[in-house]
Image (cartoon, rainbow over the protein chains, first blue to last red):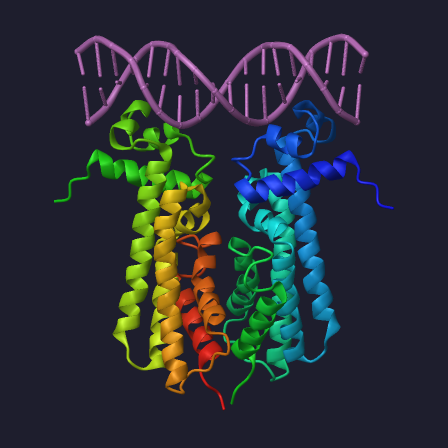
Amino acid sequence: MTTITARERLINAAVEAFSEKGFAATTTRDIASRAGMSPAAVYVHHDSKESLLYTVSLDGHRSALEIIQRAAAASTDPVDRIRTMVFDFSLWHADHSRVGRIVQWEYHALTPEHRAEVGAIRRSIERTMQDALADGVQQGVLDAEDVPGTAFSLLSLGVDLVRWFEPGGSRSGRELATLHAELAVRMTRRTA
Amino acid sequence: MTTITARERLINAAVEAFSEKGFAATTTRDIASRAGMSPAAVYVHHDSKESLLYTVSLDGHRSALEIIQRAAAASTDPVDRIRTMVFDFSLWHADHSRVGRIVQWEYHALTPEHRAEVGAIRRSIERTMQDALADGVQQGVLDAEDVPGTAFSLLSLGVDLVRWFEPGGSRSGRELATLHAELAVRMTRRTA
DNA sequence: GTCTATAGACGGATAGAC
DNA sequence: GTCTATCCGTCTATAGAC
């Protein structure tokens, strides 16, 4: 049996509110109300509104990094690896589109210290994709003139999902992730 | 000789402020101050803060639509057309990254009526890319199982630029647009 | 069309009782 | 750890003089 603590209710409420309205347009009163507590009770758990954002953003960044690192380790064949990495990264953004929106769109609302911390995780995500590409190029199976730029573009497909994706829409997350993975292979596989 | 009216100064100030801080976090005082006028003077030209956003967003959407329609008309060869469309669309987002950020990220801050109006322009942009793909597939030169999804992905490359691109950074807009155009051709050109 | 001044509402955060 | 009450600053928008 799963007990949901007040602290967890608060985080869930923050995810809902921040993803719907954006950080700046969300009031602490709104978050408190969604969590079923008074405005003052929020400050028992978090020092500030930004602290709530930081918790959501850090957790989201860590989750995304874990997904892509796990995918990178799951294959040895460079083409399979790219396909898996893009599939899993895009699927994560579809399945976690609310957290993803906060991760991707509210980065600038973090304090400089917190921004630096999650910024390091972002660079790890990019490096993981770059390494997978570079390895495939070195093996002669993939083809990418601009490895950092191509890696970034592959990640962009997933990232841009959070701008518009809603669960229950006309296309499923798996469908979109499959499309992205297929496009990624076409973008990077050595042709001649 | 170019005379800059107060109205234009106001719009420029709004673009600066909205793109730096986001719509919700921008105060009308900030916009007024950047435009060199008092807070009250803003309301001589616009009824509300949202009216400023609407003006910027509508103009930006129209500009992006014009860019991609012009590019679509510039070529007859399907591969060249895709290359040109993606190049010009990505270059526009790099060259107008501040307006682009407002167009792409502050869509939800518009009133329902204004959102419907710019929403129609968005659908025209998507349709223009879909038509170019469908034509190429029909001619047997391009290959896309999922035309709407692929069209959206091609546009995503440019759209996602506004999330991080800053002029004067390590890579130029032309460089990135060239990369995106090349990736787009790889994604869509018929292979066997 | 620009200003100063301010109305009127709201927001983040805190005080102090229970 | 949760509440009610509230401080105090800020915000959008307006009033009214020039």
